Picture 1: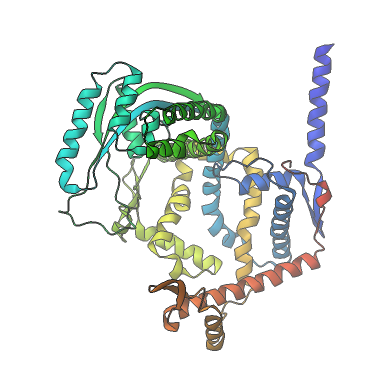
Picture 2: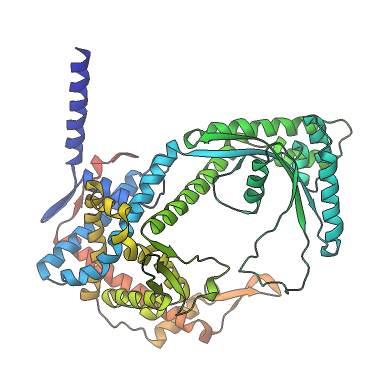
Length: 515
């Protein structure tokens, strides 16, 4: 009897879901938008591994999504009636967007799975930072780090270790907690601290000393090659390693950060402690709002973990398809030129060079009416290669991407992507090709914004602003005005479509965080 009830309940639930899927949330002459289409469109717009926030999408966000999807459908219907864009023209876009969308689908699947089932590996470490701002003192700084290492190795009691670290570390914020680190993720990607922590975790329970080398910020001028830099060292020991499910990170950080708060509070009450040390203890840990900080730490670690997983997925998919991609970093960004090899087929040696990607980008620009000259700056070319072109090039050789193509869910979502891709092609047909703005319009815009938008801080008075020369900002203003004109014409066109096709959204059927 219970089995029959269960079967009937499941059947009822399935039928209920089917009914919800077919709910009409918006309508227009010639078509509708159902709840299922809105749900798929939301997934499409939320692709790439981004997780929805609690209580989202709101009713307002769902209404905006319906409005956007409705416009795409209206444009598609208008195009079908007017025969504006051919299938061949659409294919210029779709050949890029299909494999790109399939890879984004893979990312989203992975993120959804790891959000609950992912296992983060954490090291519980204790450190002493040994540093000096004087580069001429590097030798003595290193000698002091080695001396601390030698002495701390002779101490067995955790209490005595904490006291020794507090007395010897140059990091005032950690004195109150005996040099303890917040739990450090070992499988969330690399940075200078995590590289050292991973090495220390491999030697669990053993003190080591490592130089902490920060990468050069490419936005800052590089120091002279022969100029000495101040050195910093970490004396570190990983005391234990623990694996935590992603879904339990919140409670994990509340517990561990609560322990640090308690340790710092006890330290702040140490008899004879200086007022400065008490203030440091309270500011960094004793007065810590654990719940707020734990939430931020959880979000930060999840972002790192999912980002690292996405990077590993990317590397695996490219490798399994038989390709090797060039590594693009801030450090080597400026080294790329027309002959730089960006992608290599490891089976037959075929290569894709920077100039080949530029050619593809020009074809896209020609199809959509975009200014190819502005698309061809190095940042845009390399971004296009990494996020779009590479998946177009390897899509037919990737088993994982081809498997996504066969997915019913992906096919439904990509049907909506086709609508999205059609919009710029139709706009190119219906909007004026050559827009212009007069010198008077540019000058008027400059006069309006010269004390705010087109100004820089006065070096003699930071509270004041000095107008930039007209000739220096003229082209920027012209571009802004042209873009505003295009957007205005596009808005007029889409608003007319809404009116002509009698587009209506039924907001009463929408509920927060539920599609």
